[in-house]
Amino acid sequence: DAKTTQPTSMDCAEGRAANLPCNHSTISGNEYVYWYRQIHSQGPQYIIHGLKNNETNEMASLIITEDRKSSTLILPHATLRDTAVYYCIVRVEGTTDSWGKLQFGAGTQVVVTP
Amino acid sequence: NAGVTQTPKFQVLKTGQSMTLQCAQDMNHEYMSWYRQDPGMGLRLIHYSVGAGITDQGEVPNGYNVSRSTTEDFPLRLLSAAPSQTSVYFCASKGQGKNIQYFGAGTRLSVL
Image (tube, rainbow over all chains, first blue to last red; front, side, top):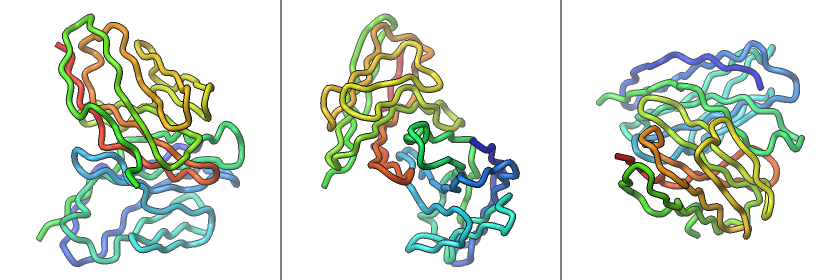
């Protein structure tokens, strides 16, 4: 699986958009980009995923560059409850080896301030 | 729909004691896994299972055993606890298809 690089931490003002970058320059054609987050003392929570098209759901938007070497997770209106560690993970799909072995890195600690 | 349930939430053991961390899911998911998370670090995969009767090792399997006799349950056994196993343990499950995993609330284990 491709390695990802994320900033260690970032701050965001409540009500503003939070843009979380992730670099995955060695991503291959069949690898998806997944985002999870972990609020303090809780289990990780799935946010969104994509292959090459931009994606949006009720939690966030995912923007993937055309060359797929980087992506940005966007929390459109950050709230205090969005304070968490955000993990960007790249995973291949469609093979038996892809059965769920998520490789978590250190992630980005996002602090939303009032 | 309870999702993924882990018990106990907290446990303190003495070195050398054994115990089993329980994990159950009610979503009929084939894939289940165990992770550990040490302070300030990301999650590391211990063991995983792709279905009843099938288990395999993850990144840090030493000191842990697992079995998968049913689809619903995936217990993690510590045969002889060591202080290095002090950690927070998370169980996760997913169905077929994309890597959308559902995590339990975690078990906080201290080994003295």
